[in-house]
Image (cartoon, rainbow, N blue to C red; front, top):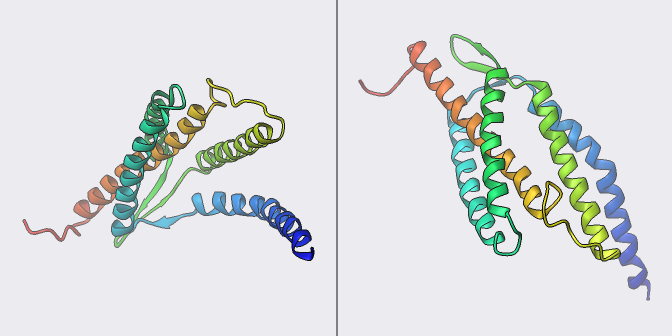
Length: 187
């Protein structure tokens, strides 16, 4: 009997901790996302290739999901293309500080804040819709940005942003290394 009472209590404690830690986590995300950092070529390259792998897996998931969710592939494709544009805009808005040994960059605070707000909206909408579907038997919308496909578009936008931003950042680092005479490749 005590175990049956402890399980709901443990769930409530977990939910309370998540509700308390979520704002702190989001604040930390905005702070670290807009901090000045050194452009390390190996790390930027690793992140870029990891984003490409994630994008390929996401495309596979969107293809399978389109069987059950109408428009999933279309929404994911449009979200990814929008993400490419946002990534290019993010690169333009990034402040670069070339130095003699390294390139430093600082992403735009407002763009980081907007993308973080989009993540919050996506999480809240998913939780509210999941709650309504499970408790009140309210069906999920089948079209629009609140549908499954619309939520996939938001995720695709983030992947497109990360891919384009990483690619442009890699090009900027390569240009910086060549311009500063640090290109170590044989000529």
